[in-house]
Length: 321
Image 1 (cartoon, one colour):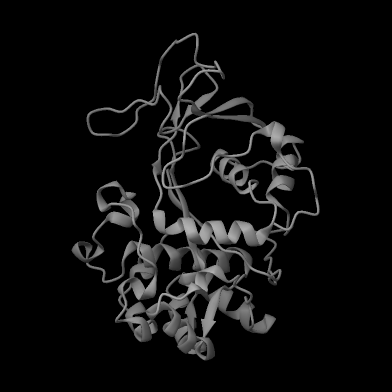
Image 2 (cartoon, rainbow, N blue to C red):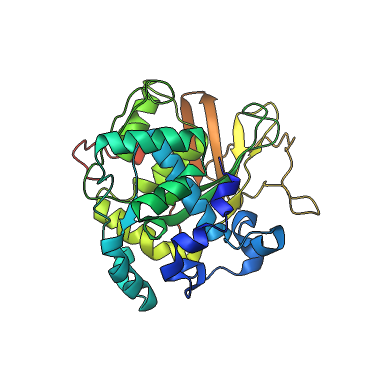
């Protein structure tokens, strides 16, 4: 969850070496502002924050990752100068796998994780005292999903997904409360476990993992994610069909829009809704909580990927993704 501290003006001091670069040296996104997801397009200065959504939501993602898993992705003072030079010269640092995470000793990580869990603003204090920067440059914009209205409980979430690839498996800390077990798996292994009813994942995660299956090798996924990130992404609000186990996504021929551009729950009784040979399909079909099929025959916007279908899932457990 985003916290007001993620938009704090105190980050200006933490990132002061990058103050002359827009968004602290993050690469510019080509997507026109009028089509950008609201979480990124909103003028934060008008809301009283000098920190843009592009930066703040990356800080949020890094903080939440640390809170939940103990994985800390930061840039040390010794790395700061070379990073500053590369961002100013727009060198290809984004195309190099980020190798380091959690270089602090376990006791130090545990101490700061406890403090950040107690108060998210302690993430700022941690970065200042340890003289590190949240590695916002390692996160590549991937997608943006909005929870359908009236489903999945009371809360709705506007969620940005970022990709970050590491060469080495980072050290993790489980607190036996929110996190009780860690397991590193390939995207295809997670999907196969879901289909075998060994675990449950939400539909957006199913969709995005199916996209990632296009790249069996980690380096290929990283290169694609880094290159594609500057294109931008769509803001997706799934539309759930009444009395049908269907969820429509933008681009589907039956995806409804009202005059304000907001999707509403659809009530069509079209007998051809599940005709997989039809054109203009972008939907998720559910049989039950562990049986989800993707029907996609549209061209994704912003040079993104079509997800791999269930029948095409790789079964190689030696995949390096």
